[in-house]
Length: 373
Image (cartoon, rainbow, N blue to C red; front, side, top):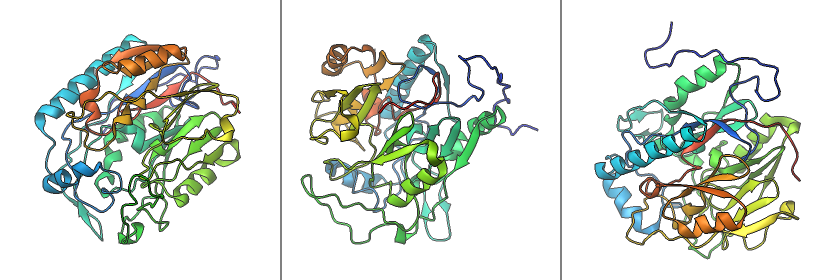
């Protein structure tokens, strides 16, 4: 019997042909040809319950906004504008031959309680944070924000469908997120200070967006949501087929690697010109391009990110790349770097803390497990 909100179970072919994976889930890199993707939604998007995990990553001018509006909906006109851009994004992806799936809306302002704390939710806009795909394994991440504790429920109908179709389905250890998970004496190191992370090593936590996949090699960073414990859990879970490389960048408020270091194709790397003053030795011999300065106006609201979200592009294959339509410097940079940019309006979605990479998780890319280093 199918649950009321579950999509009908699809039967995927177990074709032996070289161009078709046996599982509906299969993705090893950020650049193999994209066949199926989950795109997030902004339904019921809400300011999260205030918690000490927020100040280490929020823009300084947004702290008071988040305190004042905790548990309330984001401005409806901004939600509507972001939703319209998501629909444009979906149309572009489908026009490029990509199958697009969407999560189910879940109530974000309904309080939920564990043995130790109470919170409300935030959104299901950024599947890249909540779900990590490595090969045919789709992994629910043990995220560190209490406001995202039940976010994966929005993806459950899809996860069940993919499992029935032959995919592996894994969930990282569900953290308690008690006060012991957070450094109670955390203080802001400032923009030029040394990293001081708010998450402790009490339990494993990680967001998928702190990892970027290059075949057998996976690049990772510790951040204000991803700890050593979480990275080690993933390393052991994936086993000897994969090598996880952990790098630290010049970023005093790290959260998510995909606006810092972006492998775009074999041998081509986009970097943040300030956070990556020295390219890791692993990428020796690769062509490296520094991202251009962002052009988002100061008047445009960015609740949870810096203007460098302009680096958060999405590769459709080794040539085609989705880029924000108004970001002419990035469009020009992509052309100079040998790529074919596909522009899409996304600035209103940027306000909610992400861009094209954040708003997606690639379910299936046509490729095989290889080494690129």
